Image (cartoon, rainbow, N blue to C red; front, side, top):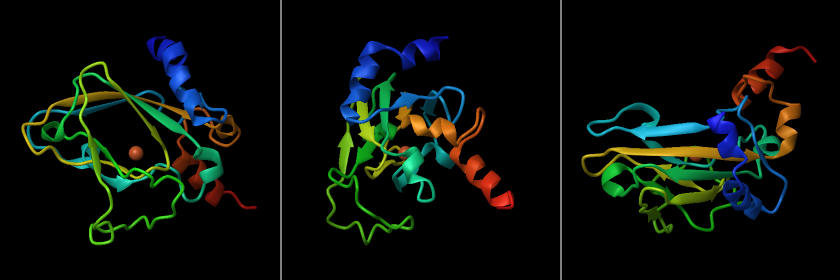
Length: 172
Ligand SMILES: [Fe+2]
């Protein structure tokens, strides 16, 4: 109920509308409402995200254009592993195996936040959440608004990867 209220909160809907095309939150598929927690101390796994974008190469018309809104619970800095972006990278084709050498000279922009701030990013802008440079300790709620057509392809309880696996295993 809280997630549904948040998805339909007029303030979030107003921010999602900045996308300029129809988009809606799906709480019953994809990852719904996501809580990213980077607890203090050493981190491992996907808490630290390398540079990437969120438009699946095999399904971009389904997953994009999309927008993700991050509600900052703790606020963030480089010491806590903040959100970082490459401004202007949206709509560009990049290799999924992008290297730091290839990115030399690209404008990397870290976003410091306070509790209660929100970040808004397009799914196809390059972004990352690097390892904390300090003690860590960050929590952010993420709500994503996808094209409505996603519901025609991704079933309840599925993520995009499940849909792709299902289609690969189904004889045509
Ligand atoms: Fe992402």
